[in-house]
Length: 115
Length: 111
Image 1 (cartoon, each protein chain N blue to C red):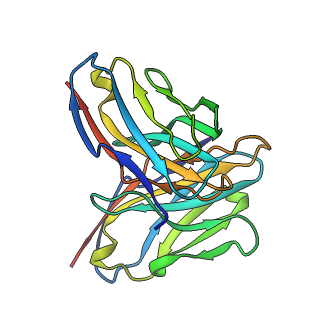
Image 2: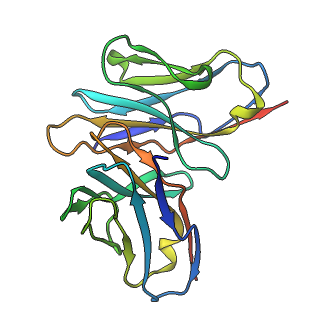
Image 3: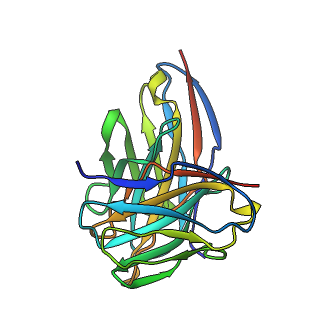
C-alpha cells in the first residue's frame, strides 16, 4: 500500500537553529508532493508543493523542500527557525494514477522552537 | 473570502446519538473530502466526492456516511457514533485534485 513516512515525531530546537524534517514515500510512479503546516489550534495550511520541474521548491515563511526521486524523499528545510514556527508539519503525497488522485498524509512532526 | 467552513467546531455527544457535521465551500470546487486526524496517525481520508452525487470511500469509511446533493456542501453523518470516533475532523475542497483547502476542523468527543 502507498504510504508516507515522517522520520521525526517530535523535534525541539532553539531559535536560529537549522531545521530539516524527513519525508519518504512508497510509490514507484509519478507523484505530487506537499508539505502542510498546522499551527496550534488552526487548520492545515499549504507550506509548499512540488508537481514538476526544479526539484528544489521554495515555500512561504522561508521554508524549502527538495525532491530526490531516487530516494523517494521530499525533506523540508529552513536555515533558521523562529519561535513562530512552532507547529505540526505534515508531508503528503498524491500518487498520480489517472483516476481520483488521493492525498496521503504522513503521521506528522511536532516542532517546538524555544526562544 | 474563499473558504471552507465547518459546523459545529466542537461537539460532545453520547454513543448512538446520530449527528451531522456540515461542510461548505464557496470556491465552486468539484472535489471535496473528509479526513480525521488522530495523534501519531496524521490525517486519514474518510470519504471523498468528485462531484455532485459522486462519492466514494476513503481509507477509514466505517461508521460514516456522506452525501453530495449540492456542489458547495458535503456533510459527514455519523448514524450511531461510538467512542472510537472521537477525533478531530477536517473537511477539504479542491479545484483540480492538486491543492486542497482545509476547513477549521471539528473536534468531536463521543462519550
